[in-house]
Image 1 (spheres, helix red, strand yellow):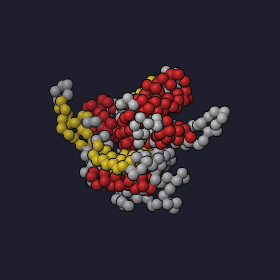
Image 2 (cartoon, one colour; image 1 turned 30 degrees about the vertical axis):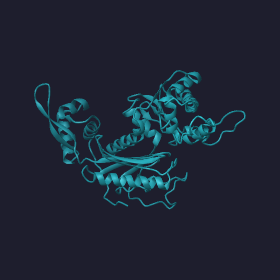
Image 3 (tube, one colour; image 1 turned 120 degrees about the vertical axis):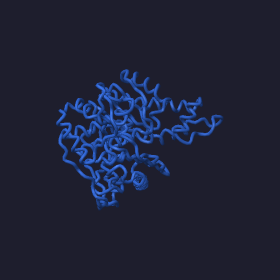
Image 4 (cartoon, helix red, strand yellow; image 1 turned 60 degrees about the vertical axis):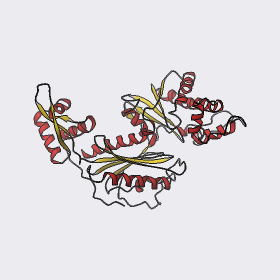
Length: 393
């Protein structure tokens, strides 16, 4: 376990906090530009910049010539101001990426898992710890202290923030649902906050900040792949719910009819990739249609190439996804629905989902995510940067 001394915490005045966040979010700027944007007087700006410079958090990087022809020093976050880690534990692999506080990627690593793992297994946690070690070795001390870690995983968010260097729990590192306690698996410096966030929520955050839902005040991100889930943004903020479980679409009652009794997480099993491939195998023509696709990726590739049997399976699955989307539309009226996940973001799904939503609910804009399979990790990084800046204040 890494026992590096915990990162510094600062008691910054409000003006310095505002300047620090502005440089992190909006990029390099001169003092006059910052004064205008933040409505700070010249004396207040001078005091704030002096304090941030003294702490090694900002630095000049050349000059900028204004409209009057005068040159002014251009400031940015200092190279040693610190960095964050985003970690993604997915069903098929794990990733980690280090970013500076102003959003520059400075290290990344990933590892495939031997088999699909829909929960956070010990194997997945070990792989996550490995990619974190790789990234930390790559980054070294060049970018200042590690200030925050956010882990995106197929689990409920943590209610509190663990810290690196903590002792392992007496229950062997397992949570109540049997998954690994991720905060105890990662090798990070003592005192560095480690937060676990739901992976679908992270993807929703990324699409809101960088993707197709940029600046949307209300939308729903629906992930369909090995598992399903919904991330909900209302008034520009992620909806967590009383238990951190808002958007757990897997728990919607399914099946639900006079002749069927709902099963716990039955909808997730029905819409997940494993069940899709079982239905594909069961409906595949016995001869003359080629071999059954080995996985969902191969199925969609066959459908895209014009294979009739594959296209029928894909269209039916898209209709089933459309029913989930219609339920979300009926409950939330989000205005925009973004489809993601290994299956959900496939363009072959989109038209049928839109048709089913119009048929069962009302016409709502439905589109696929713009960040592909990077959405979850980018969301984790963005949350880590925000929390790091908050803690430095």
